[in-house]
Length: 297
Image (cartoon, rainbow, N blue to C red; front, side, top):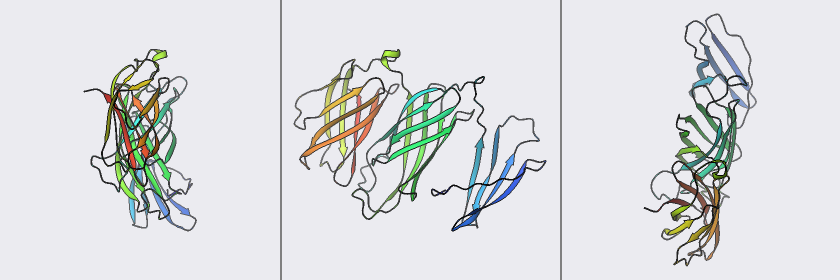
């Protein structure tokens, strides 16, 4: 919690209950109450309980046992591309960029997400999946002063989703969002299969839009993507928008000339194969902006 790792040990009683006081250096102690279902006939494979601190807060605790192994393979194994969608609106105090990442799930049930949030902050989370197809996302950020947290749920159609709470503290020396913010972003994703491995082709006509990031108005272009991921932007193209898609991973990158800043700005993002669209972010002077790729309406 807050970048501080705490350890405890104890004993469950015959009813499956346990209470522990967790001491923390220079911090108030925590009380952890646990319950292991040992008396009912239900196969819960879980622990429930609470974590509290001197009445300041009480948080629900839920722990699912990691059940996948060599003889019980995880049904959600594969590589997923994910996008973190910002809330609707154009509030300059909240990042308008789309975060993105790649979540790799092993047959043993291990899940590892590597990516970036909509303000350029890198995230990395490694924890196993439960047998219910749930995966806890928690990453301490900004020198242990901020975080992002949410429950990712896998569906049977190779998609996943979550609501992620994202908190950035005030940082007076930062060029971006020095006042900090608290917001929710929507995580969506699906399994990505390279076209060379039998996945769908990336070819087609696309609409590319950029907004926020100190742009006075949005930039909207159309372009054509070939099977190799090369993108040809249709004229007029005064911003000299250039973009390339890596079909093996779903990642795209590119650049454009910012009309207000009069300099080249780079951007990156990922595509969702089932949704047939993609999104990412770029950084302006003091705001993040978005880039989206969608089929031409």
